[in-house]
Image (cartoon, one colour):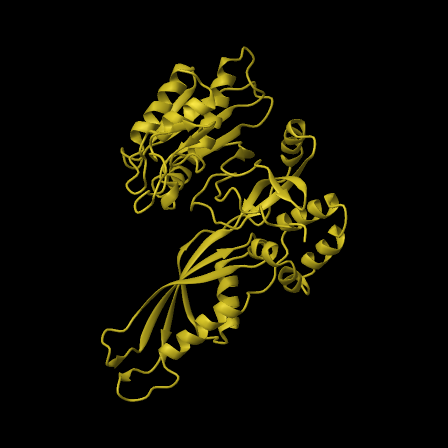
Length: 400
């Protein structure tokens, strides 16, 4: 079989790895067969035999640290969706491959797999080991995938300094620039539960200042106000790079965005682009689930609110708790994390020059940009981990 990424992608799409339940074993087994046939050193790592992960290693000359290529083969459901073509048919139509996972992220896995198989055919080993890590369960926070691999088999990644993962290198137009965002960091999941208490009572008796009213105030604050501005390393580098490349107005725009006293006003001024950039400068929280009350004629004394929080690099759950309490005007607001993992507070940008050179060689007009992905990673993700929408930055800095 050809090792060309388009044909690899079509074969990968035809494995139905919808998560849940995942059932990635057959797909992983097929990838392992290709890697074994090319002489790579392979290991299957599984918390559940139906949900395996694969690590394939191509030994290098030892002149450079190992390089990690990582991706996942599970996909989100197609239930309740209308598809023009069979989501698992991998049809090739007018030069485009259609199917669930073509972008997220079997397309990426096909490129990584094709690259390591071509390297294996070379007569000269690469400077350092190349590791291909193909994961299960990314779409469900990774307890059978990245989290399991990191917690139980971290020694396999000893010495790895850089990794290539899900997002980056896709061209997008920014104010007439041929921009190529390269993800070098991402926000962290900080899911929370708030307990809101107040006096209970009978529904026939007017109640003021109870748990429902407190909930309303909190939801209103989340709907109308931002959390504090934080200017962190990656967005600053990205904004400065865009400003330097813009023919006019770039430095003034950068000054406004990177001054915490003016960030929010500048975001509001640039409208749609501001909406895209806003989560790069703030921790964010959205209320997603409310629980409470048992009968229509009984005023509840406790409500529970599930909150989806996303943290900027360097921020902690305690920082977010403090910001939420200040936003709500309630120092006694009860908060606890339900899913949280502390991320790195600094980005390693040392691979940016090489990646930039590769992009400029392919497109001399390219403007490579370091990027912080506001969409949070899989819990337990490996270095250089995943991200989501490939068009997320398309509207940013649109010429007005």
